[in-house]
Length: 432
Ligand SMILES: *Cc1c(COP(=O)(O)O)cnc(C)c1O
Picture (cartoon, rainbow, N blue to C red):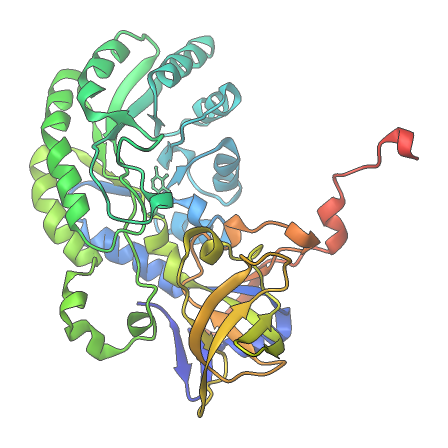
């Protein structure tokens, strides 16, 4: 659920008409709802309250400073995947001691920085990485808290580009080898074996794969806890959200359908996982990204042209794949709605950007209300893996970002002047 809805004919974010934001700040524009972010965090937090836990927001899904501060203020930690992300957390007022550091390619410099800042744990993805963390820690005369990412080899039944928990993936270490690795790691003097981690994939919309993976890994966690005194078990992120229209538009009847009853909610997730996890008596970490940020944001765009060909109705907008790459990259679906509700005819349309790539589209052959030049559209559920994956392809300045809180709104990332795009470049001296 989220806080974007029509009041009369106008789309609102909380108590602000989105069109007023488009007029004030221009387009393309990301708009985030603080209330939605907060609610998603708190609902999960509350649902998991029967076990000691920490929610580490996967900030790679949305790392705007205001988003991070919102979650830090709620007591959240962060799942980081680079030294840059740790610097961002610190800049946003987050607590490094609540950060877990994931990723398969941590450099010496990143490990050193994270150690100096006292991150809660390094989630190691290979044995060479454990050796490297030990070596860096020894040089700094520190003890590095580590967990190993276990690959439980369960199929999350999600898009191939976001499946991470099978042996086809580069992530984690095969479950069969984990005990031996902990035994060897226990001999490395500058490591403290603090936990075990897993993350099986992204955009899982049912609880079953989580339940399967937790069930499969539990006996291992128990053994490792007994042997090495592990303190936490991280069950990762990957909680999916609803991109399809029935839910995104808030149709109350949808919840009565059988499909709806299987859908993952904080409640259904916790109801099935807490009974498994509670007897462990360990701290449970979670690393949700999309679940918190996904439905908290939209991308607002202006219609520049409508181009009719013999076969197609192309709606050409001022946002493009450089602003939101998910449709091109993951075949992702985003609901597209006008900021001012239209009655009347619906027409099968392709909404496309101005970039010189056939992949630059947001939808194909989708029934949409008839729109014309100057109308505004919103791409819903764009708060996760949206702006953070933006590029400057075609020398397009990245979108601006706005945070809404009740009646208030603030520009939380300004639109950069185009010449900043090449500010770090120079002409080689022999060309001058
Ligand atoms: C990306 C990632 C997450 C978050 O994934 P979501 O699908 O956004 O919840 C969590 N943990 C790790 C290790 C990740 O790489």
